[in-house]
Structures are given as C-alpha cells and as structure tokens.
Image 1 (tube, rainbow, N blue to C red):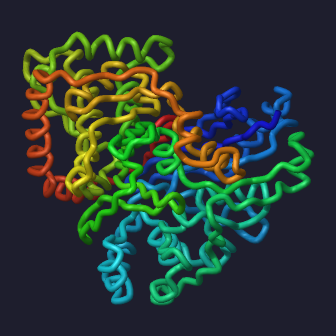
Image 2 (cartoon, rainbow, N blue to C red):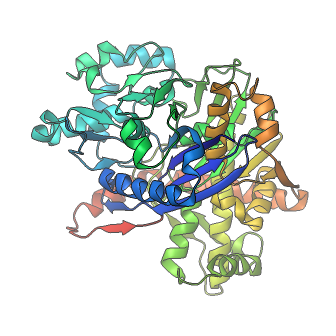
Image 3 (cartoon, helix red, strand yellow):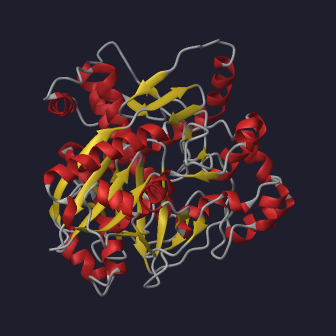
Length: 509
C-alpha cells in the first residue's frame, strides 16, 4: 500500500510524518531547529535544516517504511529567506519572518510609485514579514554576499531543491515576493534593481516533480517517488482543520497563532487592514484571516523562563497553577508581545508586559495570566475576520497549544464560540496530506478529503457568566495595549543606547 511523506519545517522543529492512503498518521519523528535572536535579528541555519533532514530520512529508512513512499510534499514556515550559491550552499543565514531588520527597506517599497498603485488595487502594504525587503536588506548591507548569491529561497523551496534539484515554489508562497497571480511584479522589482530570475519559478499547487535518483537510492524511496507541490504551513493548517463549514474559524497555535476561515465568501479589505484574503486556487475557496508573531510560543517562553524544562510534568504543573488562580488572574493581564507584533496590529517594537501585579499576587496568577493571554490573542485575530462581516460560530483548535484543556475552555469563554478540539493536533501536516491527495485524485473534493482525514475529538462550549467577565477584561487588554503603542517605540530607542554583544539561542520559540 502506498504511503505519503510530509516534511514539516516550522519555527522550532523539522518533522517527517507518514500517512497511509486513508489519511491516518502512522509515523512521525522530529528534530529541534534552533533560532538565534539578537536585537532585531531572528535567524536560523539552512545547513542545520539539511543535516536534520538527512538524519530523519535515515531514521525513516531504518524503519522500513521508506520503500513504500510514493509521494512527498512539504509544508513550512513562510516569509523567511536565505541565499545560496551555484552549488546550492547557503551564502547567508536564514532571515526568519519575525526578523525586523528590513524595516527601512519595507518603508522604501511602500513609498515607490509603482508599489503605491498596486497596494491600492490589492489592499496591502509591504512589511518586514515580506521576503523582498529582506533580500533588499542584504543588497544594501551585505553587497558582496548579495553579488555572490545565485538564488533566494525560503524554507519550502529548500525542501523542493533537496529532493528534486529544482528551484520552484507555489503561488501563495510567491505572493510574499510580489507575485501577482501570473508573474513576479516586474515594475516593482525593476524599481528595486532586483531581477526576478533570482527567485524560484512559480508552479501551481499540485505540480509533480521527479525525486532525483540519488535521493531515491540513498534513502531507499520508491523508484517512481514524486514530489507534489503544496504550500506553506498557515494555509495547510487551515485545510487540515476544515470541518466543511464556512462558519468555523481555524485556530492553529504552534509557535505563532493563526486564525483563518476557509470560505466561499469574498471581502474587500482596505489598504490599512491586516486581514489577508488568499485565493486557494480550487473549488472557489479562499482563506481569510491572519497570523501573529507568537501564540503557542508564549507558553514555551514561560516554561523556559520559569520552570524546569527537564521536568516531564512541567506542562501539568503550569496548567495546575493556572487552575489554582481565579478567572482574571487576580487582576493581572499579560500583553504577550515577546517578538513585536504583525497582526492584528502592526508594532514591530512591541514588548511583553505583566500589568496589575500587587502585594497579593502569587505565582499561580502569573500562570493564569499567561494562559488567558493566549486566548486574548486568538480573539484579537478572530475579530479581523468578524470585522469584515464574516459569520463565525465556532473555532477548531489544533497545534501544541490545543493540548491544554484549560486554554481551550478559556478560548471558548473569551470568544463566546464553540471550540472544536481536533483529534490530530498536527493539522498542518494533515492539510498538506489533503492537498497532496487531492492533487493525485485520491479524493474527488475537499469536503470528501476533510471527512476522511479531519475528525473532532470533543466540543467545548462557552460559559455565559465567564464570557461577560472576559469581555470586560479583553476590552481593558486592548485599551492597555493601545495606550502603550507610542511607548514601545520610545522603549526601543532607549534600548539602542545599550551596547549588547550577547545573543540568545532558543530551541523553542
């Protein structure tokens, strides 16, 4: 029986997941990926990506499953970029989505006449989370490295190249680099003196490529094994959480939180809106919503900063502490902007804040405040879609954060929506499997695929009394953050006066 391999490269790990033809996960293995943070830099190492992938593929070979792998696809973080030379070796570190060094380049693009005309038509602004400003940063600041770079790739393109030696990407990933549905925007790139042939070729989702004979033989893959192009993790996660309803928003909280709706509806956001509307490319579906800079990563930070990570029961300890505090965390609110923010508001210099600490505050209250903050960021992102007139009556939750029952209940109470907890938290990989399976005609429709591969483990209902309390807390949370927006920038300027030669390497963002 044929098997399907998904390579999932996220912000904190690279995983390989094997599905059978019924869409059941039968194998998974992972290696951590390290992020280096210093000031505005958030970087990873593509050589480490490759080394980890090789280890995982050798493990798969040893398992005996590799010989049955007929199709491979990948789903990865989007909006990260690095350069390679003509031999495929990295010329730069990987500049990740939350890296903020390219602010000046993004501002320059926003002020281009060619871009202003496009931004009015397509209702978007350029930001540091786009890939082109990151590449132009290298052009402006590392000209010799830029000149010696043969191609610019993201995480997904790295995996495509590893298996096929082809430089290809999908239209949704290419959209981060001013791909307009037909080609990279020549006018904008010309104004930036950047040639589009430095970017990967854009092919449709579902396009099929041969795995190189060297890779097939080295890892004992099926001789006729093919790579199928799908797309990046936030989109795949929505597809892997889809229950067939236009009225369910998919909340995927891994390192970041993404809240998006797979729908037949259309919207026309204004230029200043941070809600994204992306055409899926089949069945007249589009994905509407947004992703922030940190969701489940809030919990990982809290664990790293205040708990023993070697304690096997650390998550139970954190959840028990949060249970021991009161609703509203005894008056504490946590603004969780540990890496700035890109949606539902844009503030690259935002920082995290515990507000309301008093003499009676206990450690349990801090834990509760952190748990509640994860629900507040979900509600904030959900409102992007609600404010565009979409009707949403439920959330499906997946990703690592969905493992916390208390978080799921708080999300139900804060949003006043039913919360559907999925059976398989790996919704990103499930979504990639569904796109792959649709491409090879394993299923005839998205609905059929979803019914086969996506199942709900339980439904959590909101508590009206709790919602009324959280409604007031959430308003105060928003007001508090708005009052600090100018202070975030002032604080950033203050930090520039401090010389800091250190950096932090994190295994879990």
